[in-house]
Image (cartoon, rainbow, N blue to C red; front, side):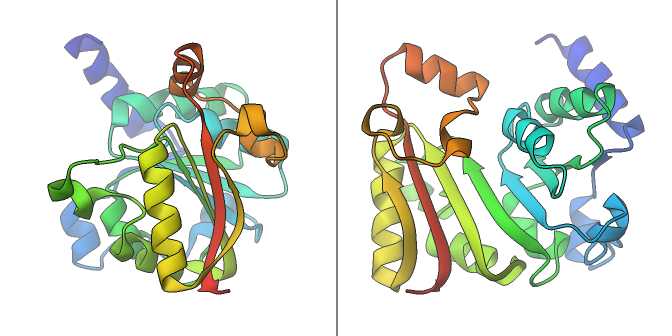
Length: 225
């Protein structure tokens, strides 16, 4: 993507009513006024479901289309990517979808305890190298962040092409005695996965499938099993 196109998307994001872009200092200093008031943003009391690392927003948009009785927020640090999802939501009047440009480690500055009903983590960077463990979105610190913003018994979904990340996450959950609702190492060959894991495919997922990669899926909660 050319730099001019990126700049145009950044400018567009500033005008989109469904894109929220808080500054890092604003969040760290506790000045983000939307925290705890996301139901006001959507104008209804419906459950709020968060997608981390949403990329172009395919999952956020399609889930929102299918379930108008819930609100969906796609979150990514790359504004030029989430622009696509935000623009699609505006063009199609998908009013239960919104997007945040921010970093995942700032979740607790964005949401109050219990404000989120479910979290989707779709095809994150597995951060395979040992030194990158702190950036892995299912490490112990991130699981604790998710638990604090989730409602009691709120679900987390992990969909990835990385067998390494799938196995690492299973180990983390089992080590903490957390409840695993569903685990599948190859959802398109083994069968039995929930429909929302099978019937929605991201841009990158389609590429992985063309390469013959297996797609894994985990559904778990962060309360003791």
